[in-house]
Length: 109
Image 1 (spheres, rainbow, N blue to C red):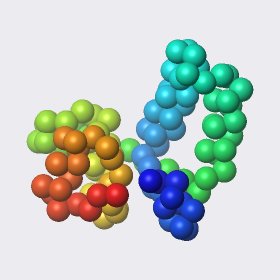
Image 2: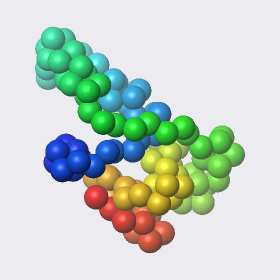
Image 3: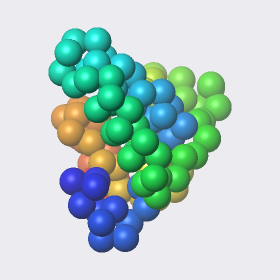
Image 4: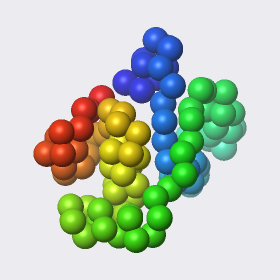
């Protein structure tokens, strides 16, 4: 879904946290023999060429306020806050996060 939007010329905007999350997914895929270390490196190198824009994370108190108010994880709150702050659609497959975003009037991708 996101790669399709990139092919159409969109630039995904992600919190800086995304870099760690993406790297962790690749590492776990290698550790569980889903992909080889070489394949992981190829994927990471390719991802590094994509026009992905990273944004800073919210302040600790702002993040905690979102977590407390919407009863979501700090990870999800980071993405929700970015969508709210930049008034951009949120791409997620997480049902609870999608529902929270919809309840707030945010657009989903």
